Image (cartoon, rainbow, N blue to C red; front, top):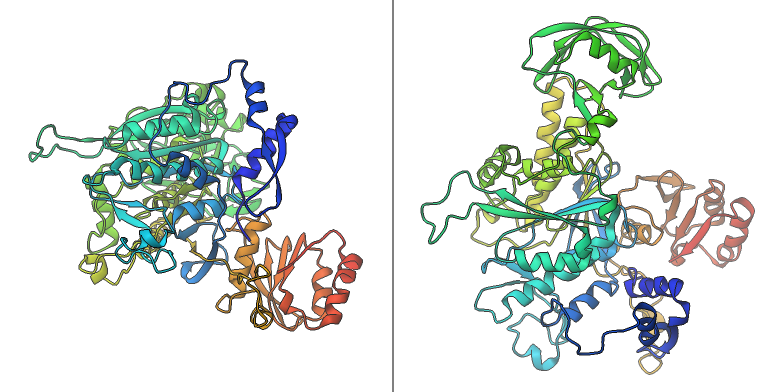
Length: 637
């Protein structure tokens, strides 16, 4: 019931390359395990291996080795769904996760390994006033005496794993480095081979961040450090120089696989053929124009307002199998002539999108001539003043300082040519990244999915946020997504947008301790009472949905998978991705229910040990599946 152990995976990789460098040893529990013989491995990697203590170029700080190990250790935490806090829980593909991001990232590593196309984070800048996560979750009894109530008498942390990192702290940079290092290390594992990470930072830790990124992602995969203009005008209160710039550090998982980061075209590799600056005129469209609305249907004649553009179809536009079946005249403000329209249709470049009118694919020649993004100094990338205005358009008061503008993240996502991939932000804050993903999907018809992670940091009792009823930062972020999604949807409906509409929902998941009781005892600790106390191995406050979200990562099923709740012979049964996973945690499950489920031929079937009605069901369970669905993988909790 733990997440993946990264060390075991690394040992297996080395064993595949150098099998003679792997040996066995007894671990701390006295059980045999595989281990690396580093003397033999050194001989394989270098004829002149570096000796211990030999001088070399390196970047280090106190507790760096512990921070690195922390990234590799598994977690036994689990994610519990909160249906009431979610929006469109049963259908959405988006995730909002409350919890310490290091543990959450480790849980995600279970089944999102190599699946995230882009990461954007805006971590604490270590300005001397912000909070830095503390990863010290247990202390000795001697240390506990001086911790001012931060830990209980057993050495367990009872306060938020956050600390204000002031410049008077003797470990000012060390604490920040130990916080960011393991999180970036785990995050790298989640990136696709052509994935990229964007990290906002200021001058306080830019140098250290660059060194860490060179170590984790390799200096060969460093892309650039861009300047972002955070203010329109310098402050006259500046003591020495008026600081107007922040930085965006960009690194890739594998540089040779990363596409050019370009601001010249939309993320679906298209260019518009409507230009609102040109006079309105008519163009004749031959049959055979691609339609991105589905296989069969009809666009009714009439004028449609799409974003800021008017498009009028002179006749009905029927289409089958994604292409128009008749000619039609279209009235709009075109940037190209009729000859180019005919050329685009003949070359299968032109198409009608769901939300943005008439567009065309970028030709191979144009793709090769795209301009790369440069320093983010243009108005296209917004500033802090605009981010405040955006927030106040959704809320009555400003609850955050220095939020990032939607335009900044919107254009970073767009430059990466994502269409339906995962976008991850594990310092979610005000959830600007989720807002940007929904906005871009609404603009170009993309199906990108966001994963937001945020520690449920408690708001100050005297803050405007607390006065408005928001007890944690997570509650503000979740409400921002609700309001931003509704605003985006209202704008599309008001513009008579052609479906499909973007996914504005999100599943709220909350990090918690394992669903399972600790039923493991050494002989000397075991007592007769334990025989009765541990009959049920699941904690009493856990729901069937909690258990479902525990097994999904273990079976490599994404947490955003479609879930349906149905009845089979009067028992509550979950269907995940149709019949890919069928699970029941109901009571008194009999042979009839098991038989009906087996007849559906699921890839996986999961149930609780305590769900089984009687011993006969347990005896016949395997026989039933061997008869009706022998290939189904069965799991009993």
